[in-house]
Length: 380
Image 1 (cartoon, rainbow, N blue to C red):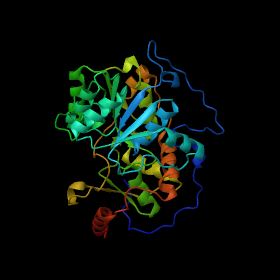
Image 2: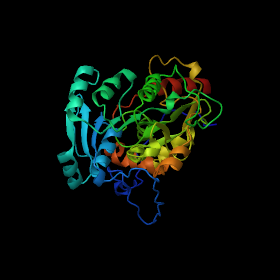
Image 3: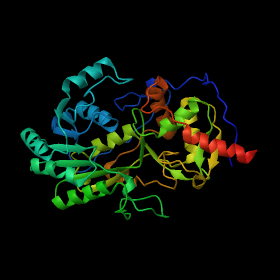
Image 4: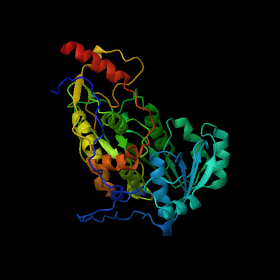
């Protein structure tokens, strides 16, 4: 059991961080010292993704997180890529670790279609005029948002959907497989309904179900939540025992999975779980974040969430339960393999994002203070 201690400010350690050259924003890792042999896998009879089979591709979304990495890989593969967004964020901006040459090539080729996907008539008319071959739906939440896309593109070759492993019904039998029961009352029920709708329309669809996603530009407070506390030298408050098992997958590995289902006949009308190879406990994740960023092993404080009223604030960024999924199907059917182990992936995220002083949300330690305050009173 972790010790309960008073909050003390610590200075950021002088330990050197892993160099950013270990990874780049294109999703290609550069190996140093250790030479890794990678197994080449080919799907018998499947269409191979290459510049010679260039497709006219639409990404619904594409300017944040998953779409940033996916769009770059697609452009590098020689596809014509259009991002459908509301135009609130720049379509292209140079990313940390991205060379001037790579950025110039990407920004010169990426196209933009500005609009609101909830405006079904605009979606129908604008997409019909473009005649896209493939649609990647990265930000879809409801089936009603997909219907006008399919109506506009009767000759669509493939619809690739970003769903969520959150659709699975809570179970004592883990890891979750693609055949497991789903929860129609899940907060991700819209994604589940979208998968059912795609199946009912008889289109060539593929659905990807990530678990927790992490990596540079993550707009969800996953690794960033830990990095804020490590940088401030604060204890890490973790609910209950801290041995709850979860799973994280790197965004670049996820982007590559999206690439590998493109034109792959074995991915037709299939669902794939995508995440990291290993599972990790909450306590282990806190320690992994510290190791990846070069901080000392953190002080961990366990607490009972039922003893606190946090209001609408979320005191911890993960489900307080065991939650992880099997990625065997994607490995065997697609030949996909995650390249990042957890510590290496967290270092990639830190070095290319938080470690450079960039993050999505300011630190908020208000719930931590409630937990630590009560712990100190009990200890006294």
